[in-house]
Length: 412
Image (tube, rainbow, N blue to C red):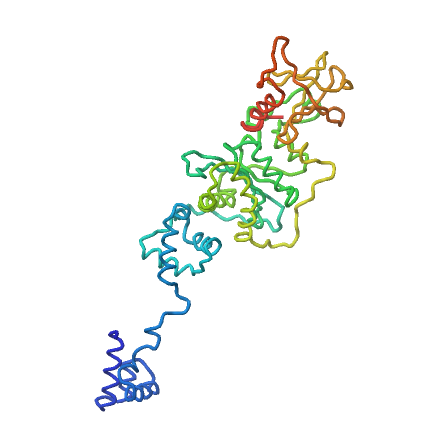
């Protein structure tokens, strides 16, 4: 018996023996006089058992067995789950292990076992929150974040877009470092799944905007065409699509995507561990499915039912749109040069001194555009060159992709 039950039994016995009144007993036990009279009858009939709670010897039907509790603790301390915060761990228990438990019960169980949630609660400076855009597709925030996603001691960069109105992730793609290729792949995912947004809100990284030195550095052709500022390869693509792009001056200005990175750095690492994902290729195969899971969990409804995403205009092909375009003029022999490599267009209809555009993409390799038509190109080898593997067009194309896609974006 508990102290409370012993005291209750003593007071009721005194009332039965006439040592105090029903009214006095009611005040002492903070019960109604009616309940005291009921207890007197029950104690006369059943004795001390009458004041012991009826559920004292019964385990609640919804309580977890000792075996399940031990399994939960074992899972939380395992390699796969040890980095999960408690809320994420609760979701994964139900999703992966079929164990349903409330957050409060889980928190109590784990803290009693000496386990703390790894989620860090840091003090942040207060910033005025900017109101969300009313409709999805009006503005996407864009950014990339380096992080040790595979707990290997090496950082990789995750590129992403998030819708300002709903918090929906529209695309994620991982590369070794933040680069043009990563953002083009996120753009591809976004357009295929959602459409073309009205505007994009990135930082001042050189993929999006040219450096100050290059901003007013224009070729003669650009000046004759009426251009006032240089534009990056990515900026050119956004301009062709009609997407307005303006830079954020501080990370706090695009706080929604900054908070997204905090969430993903906590959750994705555990998701990768659970599935034994250890490299970028495996991660990029997993991310499309995870985007849906994240959006189902965290996306919100916009204030307006209108959808501002636009379908991709029929005149565009994603493979020729999401590529690097390099303007060149053929010489008297029909040859062009890019980064000390010489190429010839494999078509006799392209005359000498012709203005052509070289299209470089992962899907299609290298092609030349002349008067709206696409032509293959051939690598021009030096006279004394043998056909070593590193001298093939495919390998030279890879080197050019490394130069244009995986380094800081260059002005078009």
